[in-house]
Structure formats: structure tokens, C-alpha cells
Length: 485
Image 1 (cartoon, rainbow, N blue to C red):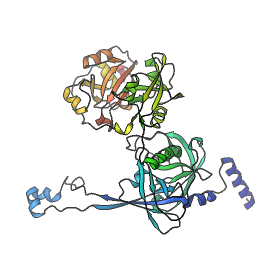
Image 2 (cartoon, rainbow, N blue to C red; image 1 turned 45 degrees about the vertical axis):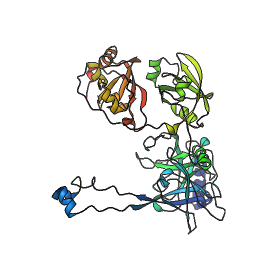
Image 3 (cartoon, rainbow, N blue to C red; image 1 turned 90 degrees about the horizontal axis):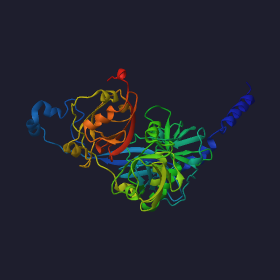
Image 4 (cartoon, rainbow, N blue to C red; image 1 turned 30 degrees about the horizontal axis):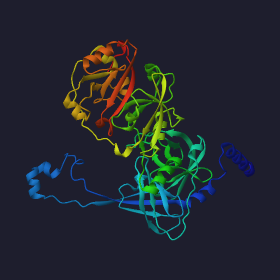
């Protein structure tokens, strides 16, 4: 094939795909505003033990603790410095840089290097938001600095071309190209107390060191902040949408922290089974699992079993939308909730609290019990026991909590698949309160084989790593022939 024909064919393919013949012009515009960040952290020694094959100090293993102290006195380990790298990008000519929280977390010194500049700048942290992995830092410079403009992440479509720029694996200013693979992705494995449920997914390569770098559209505008690598498979990266990061950035710039509105409720998506169990006419909205006492939702009159269908007059179809709209409002402001209750719509107004003031604490796990099971219990795959005051204390639950304690869950059961675990407490079966094992069995006994069982379950803070979580879980009572372990 002649060179001219090949060029024409390549151009045709690019036009069909919506991609430029070359990404070089975009890279040249974006690269100068992308920075390399080096963070230094002082790490305190963790002491002996844990890694030794002798499960402790080998000297002590052979000679005993007394000889250990006499012959080899304790030596104080010195703190050490750990250096890590990441990326960021300038958002104005005054030296403000947007990056990831984990890039600068616990850093005692932050150095920034600009493209084509041999000089390292010392950066100060303006503010951080661990919940979304966003941080704002600043450097001082006598000259006006290059910076990137923001695009609109809401208008990005699946299949749109994007470019990721950063410093992966210490290779400065590396450019990778891909498409928006999906939007609104939920990542709950980032060990955050407020997980972001709206990630942009892309197949543009994002590796270690890309963190904090920009994801840009074909106009060179930032549409996301690269923030995570999928642990499931290679070739999948994620970015915080710039519309989300921009709101956080503005709060960090003005007050150094992020405030989020808080209602004090727990929500769940409306599954077909829940829709059937509650007699709902639609699966749109968010079902209220629980209402925490003394917090805005309770004071406004929200009740467990309500379905939130609108926030400030804006219709909502999922729990994510409710959380997004409420948390975007300032603590102390009012929010109007439209809820469906017993087939009627009710409008309630709540004055929001500050979410950061209501972080829970962990509790110890309960002890297991060996109570015998009845047929319907085995078919459900859950073993339970009565709750004692001692168990409530270990679970850090209120003294007046009434229910049954989950002591065992079959690993091949639907209950296990839906997240029920040892230490959970079942408060209701098919919307009937159960205060003892006998009441629990009585309600289960009313369900026929293959019938629907709706459990109202609370997972204590020791199971969740944060506040206790209450939710409705729907299960099918499997036939006796399917009983298995």
C-alpha cells in the first residue's frame, strides 16, 4: 500500500473514532502544568516481632527473656525517613496544585518539580479531604506559572477519548491515552470513611506515580484527578470527576477543610424483593434503613421504612444521589426531603449536622454460641442466639437493643453473599420485631419453601470499621433439598 493511501486510511479511522491523528498538540499544552511531587515522611519504628519466623525476638526465643535483657540490652531504634512520589497539576498561576491526599499524607516535607525546571519548590499543604483522596498544596514562585483549565466531567460520555498525564514508576511526564470506559463507578475498598461513588473509569494506563495527575479531554481540559488502580485487573484506572474535585478544592482553598451535610440516616437501594415486600409502586428512590436518635432526620420526622424520592425538589433514583445532594450542602443549612410513606407523599425539612462530628468507633467481636438449629434456620444458612447485656456491651450497641445475634453464616448461603456475618444483629423478620430466638423461629416458621424473607439487620461498628450500619436484607428460603454447607 502506498504511503499516501496508508495515511488516508489512518486519518479515516481516526475521524471515525473521534480521535485526532496525533495527541502531540494536547500533550504539549498539558505537560508544562503537570508537576512531580516528592513527599518525605518520618516513620517511627514499630519494634520487634511480627516478621520473625520465631514469632518474636530470636535471641529471646533461644535464651529466654532474662538472658535477653542481660546479654543484649534493648537498643532504641531511630525514626527513619520514607520518600514517595506522585503527581499533581497547577490550577492557577499563583502556585496552587491539586493532587491526591495519599500523595501528601503525613508528609513532613513536600518537594515539587515543574516540567523543564531543575529547581525544586517546597510546598505547603493548604487542605486535604481524605474522604475523596483530594489535597490542595501551594508553592511560591516569582513568575507566573502555567496551569490547566477545567472541563465538565458531567458532559463526558462513555467512549470519549481521554489522556492521563503523570509520573508513573518515576518516569516523568508520561502520557497515556484511552477512553472513558464507564462513569459513576463505586469503589468501596479504599479504606475511606466516606467512599466516593462516582468515579470515572478509564483504560488510559494509570500506574504508581500517576496518582494526583490530570485526566484531560481532547481540548486539554481537566475532567478528572487520577486516583486509584483497580486491584481486580490490569488496564483499568479511576479518576475523581473534576466537578467533584472542584467543589472540594474551593472549600479547601477558603477554609482548609471540607464540611458535609449530615442527616443521620442509613439508606439502601430498592431491590425487586424489597419493592415486593414493602408494596412499593416503584424501585426509584432510597429506602431508609434506620434513623439515628437526636440527629436531623429524626428531628425532621423521618421514619424507618420511608422512601426518599426527592431532595430539595430534585427527584432521586438511588442512595448515591441522596448522599451526593445532602453532603454537598453546608452543615446548618436546611434540606427538604420528599418521602413516600404508606402510599402517600410527605415533605419534611431537616437542618443538617456536620458529618465529621459523627464518626463511629470500633467494637469488639462477640463470642460464638452453639445453639441447635431448626429446619428453616438451616435453609436460610444463619445460626442465631439470644443477646445478653455482655454481648451488647462488646458490640457497643444500646442497652435496649432487642433482637437475635448472628453466630454463624453458611459460606454457600444467599445470606453470606449479601453480606450478613457473625456479630450482626437481626431485629426484624418480615417486618415483625424479634426479641428472642423463639420469636425469630416463630416468624421464620411462617415462611414457605422458596418464600421471601426480609430481615432487618444491624452490623455493629466492630464489623463495619465505622458507625453501625442498619439495612434490610431480602433472602429466599431455599427448599429442603438444597440444604448444604
